[in-house]
Length: 63
Image (cartoon, rainbow, N blue to C red; front, top):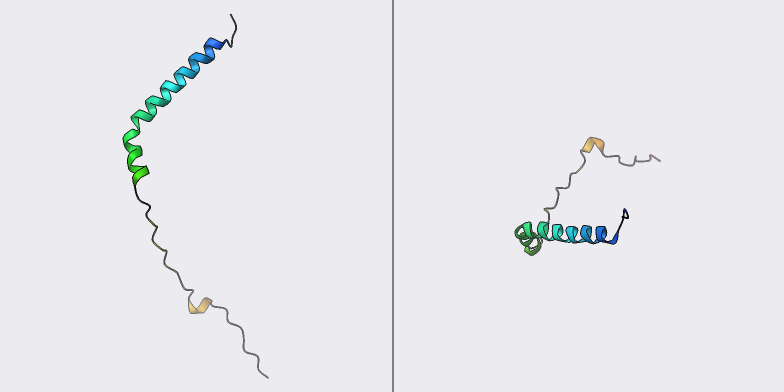
């Protein structure tokens, strides 16, 4: 008896396929709402202006 026989791989692949189908079937209702919903844009964030005491303005040169 070999450790990794072809029967072992076939049984694991069949089990994986059946498990994936069961998970997909259990979540089928929730997938429909997410796929068919229209895209909604996020609201624009408010732009914040810096306070006047933090604005660095160029100094006026005196001639």
